[in-house]
Length: 258
Ligand code: PGA
Image (tube, rainbow, N blue to C red):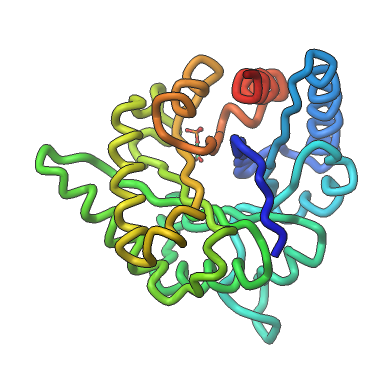
């Protein structure tokens, strides 16, 4: 597997937007123009866009400075199941990554066993796999940290260690998703340390080091850089901020500028 060293990882999660394929194509064309103008200012930005499945393939052709992925995959291989898309199907289109375990998907009934299967198959299909974890609320005793560590251990216990270099953990506190303000950089940093510790216990430091950790939840143009500088993360997962070309490109500029 080719190890890509793109840092920071700035990933847009389009969710159920935009409304039409035409809008999606226009968005990516405009984003590409912005990236070209950033290059003229010596900022070489790279983006990842998790599009709705049905829009992904046509966008791959026009995304020259970025990569297109999906927001979920099925935890099964080729076979007789109606209405699902397998990781190898996604990879065969030229999509390079997928988000998995987003809280909005878990809320619809995805359990840890199913999620673990999705992670295994998606890594095997050579998709960069963005696994989301996050607490719904915090308690003073710090039990949420143990819950997050356990979540991670349960999902990753049976995953082949050699595939870890293509795994990205997205720390997404559920209380910050769709909220007016994100977590503070200190709150983020604390969890990053806990997740790194959990990974190291599970697979050893050598493999744990290969895993990137990113933050998601109410990130804005104003707050993006702080997470990279003080929050201890290798990138960001953006919801609303990735659904507007101007905001998305402003965040890319701020994050890729030295
Ligand atoms: P938000 O969403 O940036 O709109 O809060 C983040 C996410 O759900 O990944």
